[in-house]
Image 1: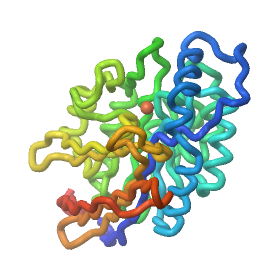
Image 2: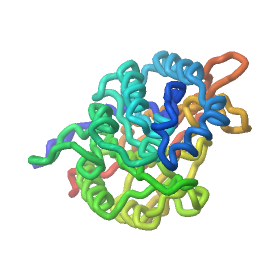
Image 3: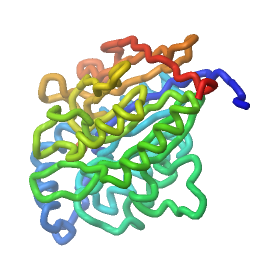
Image 4: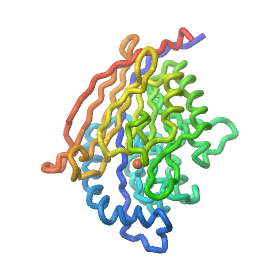
Length: 320
Ligand SMILES: [Fe+2]
């Protein structure tokens, strides 16, 4: 017999693409192949756009809003050097404990291949699932993702689209094995009547990102989502606010992409933002309030810029 409990809901924040690390101490001998290009891009461009004082102001504002949980949708680093993973770990330790902050990686974090033990292993407390299947050790992308964390009726499902690519490419890929496990997780959490939030770094919609920066398996992902369902999809990567929908019979799935968390905003529409998602059960529906808080350069502070109201049908787990 099913035990029916009504979840209380969750208010969680999303920030993305903080690119929070400094390469000031990097030596040329550390910069093999593609990393030279990434380093030069940081020195001549990104260093002026991604500013620690903007990210500090965001975290101050986040503390004032005190969400129940925070998700970080990738690209914490510039070129994925082990030293950067250490810097980012210190920042994560200040942001919150592993159980209160969920991290997924971005393409910059997997810029070039490096040993897991001195890179992503440092972030595992913030990335791993609440529970691992028996006999599985969380020691790499293939066993950590999809991650699953359940908080007050909300299932946070983390994907990793972060793969090393050739120079000038920033594409991502999930792969068949991760998509197969995603399908099983979406079915299971759906049958439990949970509000399913899928987190990935790259935009999931086909044709929404430049070819050299796209997710390569958008079609396969779209098929899994259309087949199994989800209530919300969140991403970063594009450094601008984006809204999309994944087509699904019976109701499309809303998709939000957000700007970088540290951007001064030298181009219009690129200044830092973070979003708050307040998800509450309301009878046979979920009510979702989305608030975008954005950086105001003159005031050096974050203020409310947009609010959106959505709803999604609740799956009745007692009828399964
Ligand atoms: Fe990215």
